[in-house]
Image 1 (spheres, rainbow, N blue to C red):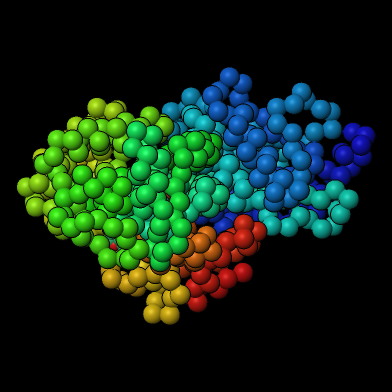
Image 2: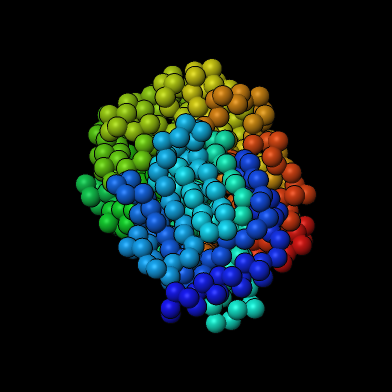
Length: 511
Ligand code: TNX
């Protein structure tokens, strides 16, 4: 195509752009500040992407954006090619040292008629910024120019920065096993909504799902079944590394959890020497909790756990290791405390920061360890008193496995029914007296007693997980249910394109 004909196209489409309003776009989570300038940036086959030279990870972010633009529009955008004469509009992904960018995931977007400039200090921030670009690309092109379709991106300025550094979801792959492919799909969906953590609940009474080379029976025996008696499964270390790498490409940290000293039936069936409840362990396919425990006073238990934590830590680049610690109903309190204090040292020795469910707040542990608040307010406040950070996962508000209402096809309701509005309309910043300065972030756990495939997973996670992304990213004064619910309705085309079997909540006027 000759340069002149392109110029002609450009003239025509500028004239054809209707007035835009960047502030009215369907962005979730809602950015901190949006200033619309009411014209349009033309995204078309003559748009090119450039990224800062020598900025670690930036070119990958540019390529990721090109791939997603291809999936949405079928346009093939070039990344970092030498300037071509007929190139008309440009997306620059730029590493900036600007001190206006407050934090590693902050970004700014300057969208004008002929360029989009995305500034961030880090590739992680740039990655969050390109999710915003993805969200504001219209679903359909300007159909007046069928030979050269153009997507009109609204112009203006966005200044954005997350309020919490930890924005996570948890997936229980122990009660029911989920394939690497399923986990990757969940990661893709979380990434679009700017999550940065996926916590994998890798072990429980019903299954051990991660290969430990020095203790092979954990998966051979302990990974062989699941709730309901199906075949179960596990990740080899190579598969786990593949998940970790896939998440890292999306600037998502994997947090591995080995749940103990309760929830350990699968481990004890594999190696009965570590069993501490006095009953001969057998594979368990039911859904009750609180019956199993490790023999916490046995010294050999701790050399076993040293191997487990060492092997998993070696293939986990993220800073955290989650030890579970919940519902150890048949462990004596003193034994539980002894256990948590010993395991904390092992986790630290392998270079990780310990996370545990809120019960760990009963032990004498370090201020660098982290408590995940799910139901034990006193335990969480005890952790605060030790100077620990808290991850907010209150079961009544943030549990993705709770039913929406009495008609829900999947899920439990022991904590509450959690319809889509209840999941969104609460204030993690002021909840149960936990001080804002102790809150590391929010995590929405998805337990899998009642779900066994990706469609069922999606039914419980969506749309609620979209709301939790806004609670963890966007400040309280920027959140409003009436405004959110319109933006949520407009996520339907994306969810449909991704083949997500979300729950079509009747509270939402889905598009
Ligand atoms: C409680 S929450 C559990 C899990 C169950 C979940 C079901 C927590 C730390 N423990 O073992 O799967 O309820 O909702």
